[in-house]
Image (tube, rainbow, N blue to C red):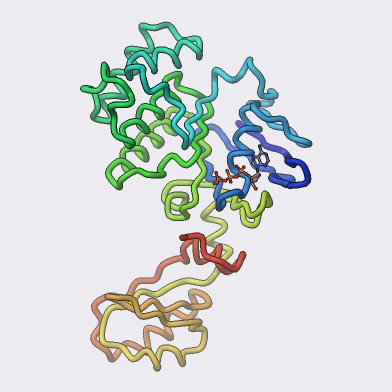
Length: 298
Ligand code: ATP
């Protein structure tokens, strides 16, 4: 288990991370969400022991993170940290050896990952000849080649097309199933929402929202009803407990105070022709807007 306890970091007068605490259990996926400059990379660097916090501690299975545990950590950054003149094979062998692995084992695992990502034919190609998305896959393979116990992914999905996002998601879930603890950062709520059990949202280095996603959603009682049909918006707006009605392209989104309002809305549209009536939890972005006052889907 990774435990981050009250870490703070200042650059000169600028407080980049302020008393941040969280735990990531074995096999858990944790999301670190925050806009540019919120303090995500600083947090990752502190976790990896590349940067010293001004205060607070970071432990992996109760042990302070130093060179003795770095072999158990995998890190994938947004910036390309690959040596682009090397071939895919040579690059991964280089990383694997740095992590103390025998070459034979590295090559075996490399073949499995290349096959999984559908890029076996690039094994002996120079990295600079690969597309951005494929370079990102190689970067991911470099981060997981040692089957780490803790995997840190800094913006793993940035610049990926939807098919590659799905491929990465599957690879991350596979790592989770192997018992790896995973932390990833993102600007996008929908990525966090898709498969993080636990999360922290940072604003200027401070936690503004954190905990298990299902608890956050449960505590936030407001819901949405999505309706398709010939309904009277004015009539629904008059129902007590209805906060707002938004007309989207194909359907109406009725924002309600709580579950108890569903019946009354249903009554209000019961005489209309309805093609869809679905009650859904609020999205993480809606919760965030209410808590912090601005949208994250920028
Ligand atoms: P992004 O999403 O843009 O990568 P981030 O959430 O990772 O942002 P950090 O890179 O951790 O944010 O930066 C947090 C704050 O600390 C920012 O205001 C940044 O300008 C500042 N900062 C980061 N590194 C340094 C540094 N080496 N010296 C001075 N200030 C820094």
